[in-house]
Amino acid sequence: MLVLSRKLNQAIIIGDDIRIVVVAVERDTVKLGIEAPRAIPVHRSEVYEEIQRGNRDAAGTAEPRSGAKPRIAPLGRTPRPAPPEGQPDS
Amino acid sequence: MRSDDDEPGVTIALPRFGSCCYRESDVIRFPWGLPGFSALRRFIPLEFDDDGRIWLQSLDDPAVAIPTADAARRVPGYAPQLPGYAEDSLDLGDGAERLFLLVDGDSEALEPAAPIVVNLRTRTARQIVLENRPRRVGPAASVAAAGG
Image (cartoon, rainbow over all chains, first blue to last red; front, side, top):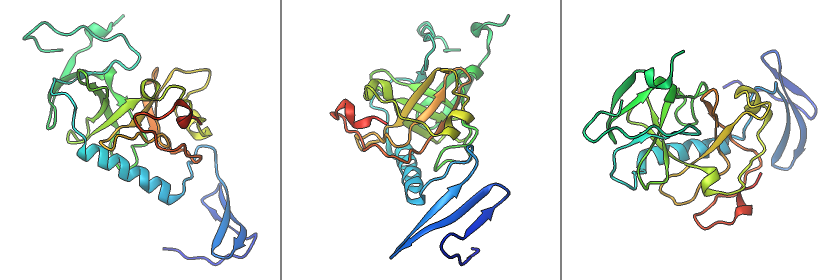
């Protein structure tokens, strides 16, 4: 890991267009100002990691509440008619 | 002009759900992956009778299926303000029709702070982590709990 020392109001540049400035230092908290292109998401790591864990847990443990055969969810489309009994659903 | 009925179906064997047939137009693309599954890019939405969930079944790794719920059905009034990168990357301008899915695991509480946003026209999606986090929404939560 690259480690840099910065003082109040000093900054680091990542790539050509991401700038991180130390805007305040208060006891055990450092406030950072982040200037990044609109297309770059910026998250607190603990928040992002919680979402990662939630996705993995849900994918690994949840089971369908019904034993029926799955079908494609229409998501805003008109549902396809169910295939005749005994026919493949293609 | 080719119609939806002309599109050939593909049958896939799913370790958890058995076989399923889908068409290419059913696929939801996640160009940026999902938190926890960054390498997975293609999913199909599956549902079961009476289940109430929409399962995002990975086509890249058939062992992965993420249970979600349509926020509009489970959390009336859910309309989070999306960050600019979400609107831009999903091309959601000009009132593009969108769908919010919330991960719906076995905890019986939905996580409204990270909606999966689907552009229904392009079938492109991205999970958005909201910085101003609404609190988790249980089965009997009030409508107001999941706003913004």
